[in-house]
Image 1: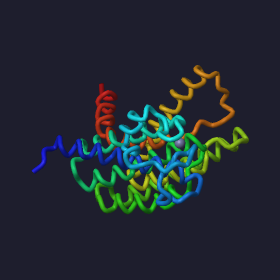
Image 2 (image 1 turned 120 degrees about the vertical axis):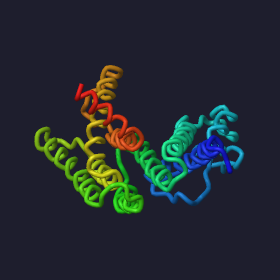
Image 3 (image 1 turned 135 degrees about the horizontal axis):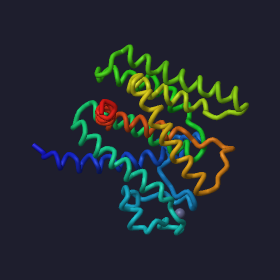
Length: 259
Ligand SMILES: [Zn+2]
């Protein structure tokens, strides 16, 4: 019988290895390249990456952030995604123990990590992830059987519908596109996994986060808001906060309201 600490450590290591695979997805999916083949190579000199240079987080540190062959700088994004995915695996198992729920939540978090970083780079959320994601995560939620079927269906409809309405109103008022169609499909996917209450929570939290960080960016860069800030990362963060901390936040919120 392994101790829980050992399970947490193993989960973190497993998670960071998955993070390494997520890096491949982030790089290749928007470019329409297979995520299974060919093996990873340096984006500059094309030299295939040896297994010992592909150890999550550690290899980046040992190589001092440069390709062994051509010495080109490796993006800090690679170890950060591996580290974050490792921490996500740790916290998922810490929260839900070694259960089916933990496994499904981790898959959901991984998909959101990939979507968020692709959205940050390319301002798109690939349909190839979000569209199949709607039935896929809906089925996972049905298997978990913690949220009523009707709540989940409402989640998909509301997730798709609310953002569609906001996008339509924004277009109608501002005569330009604000929210992307990708955000709508993403929120439908989120709704199918966490239900309609989760969708309300996600919209609220992501709007607050988006506003705060948007204002911060304007102050920092004097950036004009001609270009919409990608909203996918905020929706993803909102959904994950709901899954990990939702009950706690709502509990404190209700206590706060009641005084
Ligand atoms: Zn290289």
